[in-house]
Structures are given as structure tokens and as C-alpha cells.
Length: 305
Image (cartoon, rainbow, N blue to C red; front, side, top):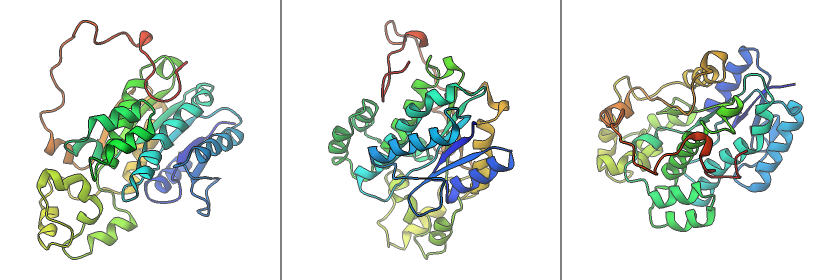
């Protein structure tokens, strides 16, 4: 039967991606919270909800899934919910639906990572490593020492999971491409609302991302508006959901079959302005540090096949 499953399908980037995929002739299986009208209704921030989503998608696709877009995520919420939804809400679905993906002729998966992954400074490594180890309790305990960092830590951990697993035998080795998309500010209803607010603007939505780097004032300070205007975004402050959706559609298409483990930034140049010299970076081989993919140990989530 096939089809493409996408989380948080009923609004913003997810809705635009559903429309784009449908226009490309895909059979779309939307996943969202109860009451939002998706084909699969569940709460991905809890284990039971994730298992429900996996089972429902398998039923609808007949055990053969052509594509998966993990788009669900939250920022301004309790740390426990942020870590659970942003990291485990994606990883558990990727692992749980991998077998169905492997049965497709050209399977592909893509993950929404947010450019917080790329431009937030001082992301706590201990939280990231706890998530990669699958230890949600430890990650939550550790992040309490890093206020405002749960979102960036969860997206960085997910990015590393994608990078480490994408070239592995259980993914690329089975013909499944796995990549990430890192959108910057995207014009959605919520963003348009905060953009029109005096002084605060994008600060309301992205304060936890940029405030440490720019030493921004507290929310409500009139100087916050000026700080937002000075963000280094060469092409302007926002992109559209449709532009991000086009990228997801491309990553799931035959034209992107040789893209594996890439994190593609679509942010108008923000990441390049912040970190122009960080990538590409010189590196050296250290004996014992890197091993061939075929011998790589499992990283995060259940063991790889």
C-alpha cells in the first residue's frame, strides 16, 4: 500500500508538507494530537502515544512505508515534554517504522531539527549524551542545571542521532535515506502574531535561542525589538512553510537518493552568518576513534539490525 507518514501534520510546516506531498501524488498519513483531524491521533510525548502511532501507521500503510517526516516538536513547554516529544517522539518512530520503510522500493526519512540546533551556543553536552543513551530521566535531571536549554539540547541530540545512524547498515545499508532539515524563522500564524507585537517580535518565540549569544535584554524591555532587528539574517527574517515543505518533498523523492546523513539549513543565511568558519572543518584521523560503518555500535534507541 505504501504512503508517507508525517507528524504534526495539521498546522504550519507539517500541513504545508502534507499538501506538497499530496500534490506530488503521495498517499499521506497525518499524525497529530487528538481533535486536530489527522488520520492518526496520538500524543507523541508519551511512550503509549508513540506506540499507538507506530501501530496505526503500519495498519494504514499495510506494512510498507515509502517515507516518514518527523516534524513534531515543542519549545515553550515543561522540559520533560520538550525532551520527550522532540527527541523520543522522533527516534522511537524512526526505529519503530524502519522495517516498514525497508520494504519500500525507494524509502526515505527526514527530520525537522530547527536551526536552534546550529546556532544556539553552549548546548549542554551531558544532556545531549543522556538523550543519545536513551536515558530520559537522566537527561531531565541534568537539564535542570541548564535553564532554557532543553529545546536546543533535544534538537542537537536528534541531529547527532540522524548523523550517526544514517550511514549505518540498518538505514543506508537497507536503502533507506535519512536526513535532517534545519529551518530558521518560518512564517506561520503564531510567528506573524508575535512579529506584530511591539518591541518583542521574534524575541517572544526565539528568546531561548539567541539571547545568550546576543546578550539580549529580558522580555518586555523595549531594547529587545532592536536586538531582534539586528539578527544576522541576510535574506530577511522568515521563510514560508511552503518553502520548507518543498525541501521535505525533495528529500523524499528519487532525486535525493544519494543524500545520506545531511543536515540542510533553510534559514536565509542565519547559520552561515553566525558560524561561517565552523564548516567545513579540518579534521584528523585518530587511531581507535573512528571505525567503519559496518562495525559501528548502535547509537540511541533500540539496537540496529
